Image (cartoon, rainbow, N blue to C red):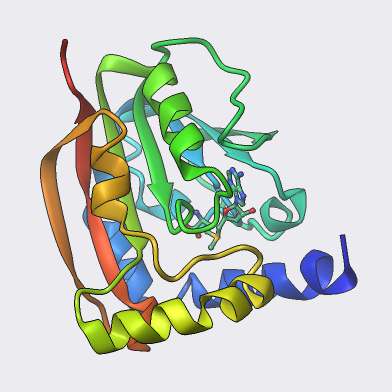
Length: 204
Ligand SMILES: C[S@@+](CC[C@H](N)C(=O)[O-])C[C@H]1O[C@@H](n2cnc3c(N)ncnc32)[C@H](O)[C@@H]1O
């Protein structure tokens, strides 16, 4: 890992992900988590202040980058257990979490389909997958910019993709939405089209 990825990028990501528009997105979804929670790509723990302490028992946060978690400064009442792991290969039991939270991370996970099948595996049948993510915009001109600059953005942004269609990605992987919204949040349009909501396992 280069010096940029280890020392510079985590601070940039922590700063950009902490901006007001993304905080507002976190506020919309994170308080819906209940019980035993798994957070995918916990990063520097920017969601932690938004959990409802009355309804969350415990949080397991996975992320392959300990240098992100080292920036966490949250002190609160919920027990949080950080595990260095990639979402594509979770060393966790089947059907074991009430809520799985994923924010601004499906854009970065190299194999997002594999990660979603792991999320599906470890989520209880009655569990909730709670997310807010940026992704592919609906306007052709913005989409064109996203597709054009994605290779360079990805290199500078630690693997982040601007052009993933999160609605399609989540729904083709066996989830149905119990709530879903999408819109531009304030900011630079190619990185500001957000998808958020709650998805459940499709019962078979
Ligand atoms: C833009 S940051 C978002 C962090 C945090 N979720 C938030 O909302 O602030 C993306 C995170 O995804 C993590 N990540 C990258 N590859 C991953 C993978 N394969 N599985 C899980 N997390 C991954 C990165 O280390 C980073 O912490």
